[in-house]
Image 1: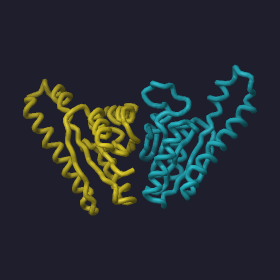
Image 2: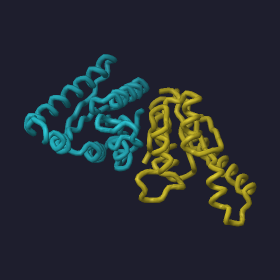
Image 3: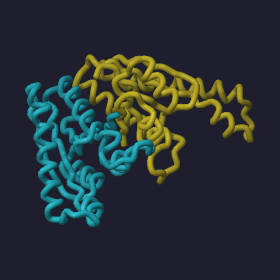
Length: 143
Length: 143
């Protein structure tokens, strides 16, 4: 277990995922950590088509939001002296997370049990359960 | 992250869960590992009611099977110099796993993505998805 991919979306459960990864780093600081934010433009644009924001403006806002969440993640690790890589990608979150893990040979994926988009009371966040289904490696689901 | 509970049923995915835990132990050998086998008597007895084996005989066979799987798990760790605790309990697997984790303050649960009972092609093993839903702590689902 060397390379860990932690997916974030800025939600409370994704903060808990970052905390779990920091706990793993405290056990072994040679782990290589990548924090991934997937910008889910198609879904978000569809959701906002009825609104007043144009897709281009929305895409720019989503990109800024991704950068903000990733910068916060870097700071969260840096405060304890850990350096992590960050990465943002466009696409369907579960698919992108699993493809990155597969193509770049990650040993473990860490996700929050529910993300921003999940409806409270659902059996599990759809993203975390899809990741657990599609992943090429062990998946740590953080509650 | 100090105490890890790994649930086994003797299946190929549960062997992979043990391997993932050994990888974690290699990162940090101060982790306390408990290997748990849950003997699901009610379901098993129901499944065998139509057969020739009496519930009492079946229960005894299930207990022997649990001991065999747990002894194999101990050997799997011991061969690399690691000592682990083993534990068997009766009940519904997901419920028992989560209750043990909660009452005994485990920091992480590790389960295989599919157990012996799961039908191939199901979205995920029903036990691993129930554990991910009910767990009081992070759950590592091993593929």
